[in-house]
Image (cartoon, rainbow, N blue to C red; front, side, top):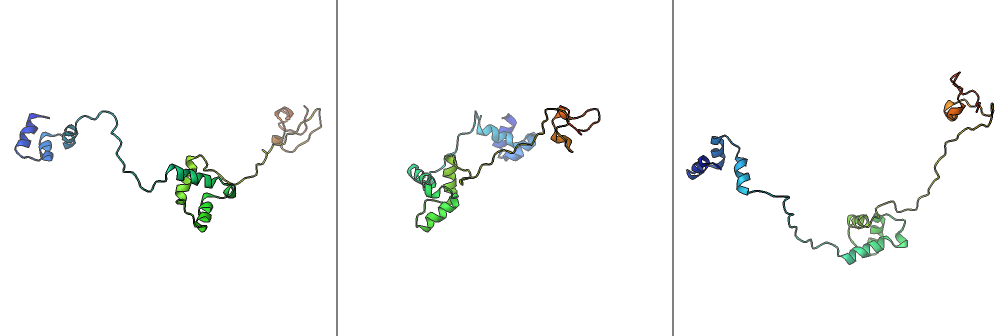
Length: 155
């Protein structure tokens, strides 16, 4: 700080007016008054939430999600069925959160896997064996470059 600022403050001049008379921003005063900041700020202390599920309760929910009876159901459907039976394990979002933490937030149904489609390729061993109307169906070696078309394959 400066001696001029100290004298203005001793004369009961407000901080904002003192700094404006000096031609400086009042944020400078507050930054210096706070002191140096080294490194990141410490994490704020968050009070413990009394509604958090314990580790055993989380394990029970995960076991429920993985039971064979519920293997093909979504977590929302599991939640609804358990609620119909009179059991409440937590909200649907809590159950989704537990499943996501266990790496199980994916499609739960058994889906059919289809083989990859293979693009048909026309192949000839000799001249005039393959005739096609579309040039993209032939391999590059079958294109008649002199005419710019693939009327016949002369591989």
